[in-house]
Length: 450
Image (tube, rainbow, N blue to C red; front, side):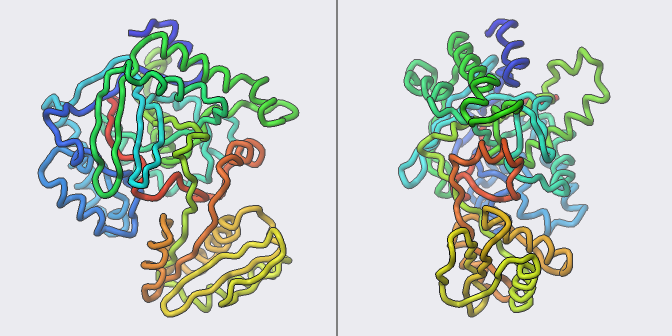
């Protein structure tokens, strides 16, 4: 058990709680069938989720505790309500059946091994939603890295607001260049009890976890996070002038899930007394913290697919839009030679492919150029829909289907992330992905939120 003073310092100074984590009892579950990928993956591929369902069968699984977003567009309101009701019932069932071990005052050290051989390292803990603000221009300790789509939050609220448990797929990033928070723990991981070690399904690789409960280790985590959030150190690191509020945690994945947790907490706390608000479990959200400089952390672009789109009209309107803004915009079937700073966006469609070119763009990122026009086009053409996908193979497969277009975007330099968010605010939504879809966080741990 950590002492009360340390717990208060963690919450008040760095927005962290290490109160408790639930893990399924390995003797009661097949861990490979228990753990499934984040609900916001494979959103245009219901076949993936049907294959997961067949693999899981009737076994205990996080599949029954989440709402795969591939079904959001196809389920009617009654089906959605029944699915959410079943999720809540299954959570209650698992708690009643004693499926979980509860680890008090614990953080979990995580090593994810990917099929290609790379490893990513992280730390499971809870963060204080009072220190998180996803709104534009936020100066909170925990911030979104991309624009939050508010209409994506209400369906998630319906799941969380009456749920007894949360299961995290949120990844928060720290800019820890000197490797002071997570890496020292891995140097002595063999001193900690291993709490899981198994293969993930569907080419997800493998995962291992160790329980860190030693008070001295948790004190070291606190001191390292406190250093990263020190205003003087923060300003010096980024060469800032004037007063800039420190950014300690940047949301890498799962921004809308964290925003949902925030929205639910704001609604709930209005019904609580000041004393009840201080340490209510719903005030916190379980996340995995990853160092931006982890060698296994790869930033991948998030590509776009348009459905029910008139390809020729889209191209014509795209060029007209950016030419009217003073850029030089055109389409070509051959990869062009362009001036530095130009944006060249490859596309595919049924029977053809080519490039959209914008010279002298107003923004730095090609994703901002493409998404800026897609937003305009969707308003004028409500029959067209967009999805955000990982992997050029998915763009090829879906983009070439009749009535579709697929667009390839460039990766972002991860070393520019924190400085960009600090100076410019949130990036365009779906700017980058931390790995391909099968490398996303899999649901595994849980936490009580009521």
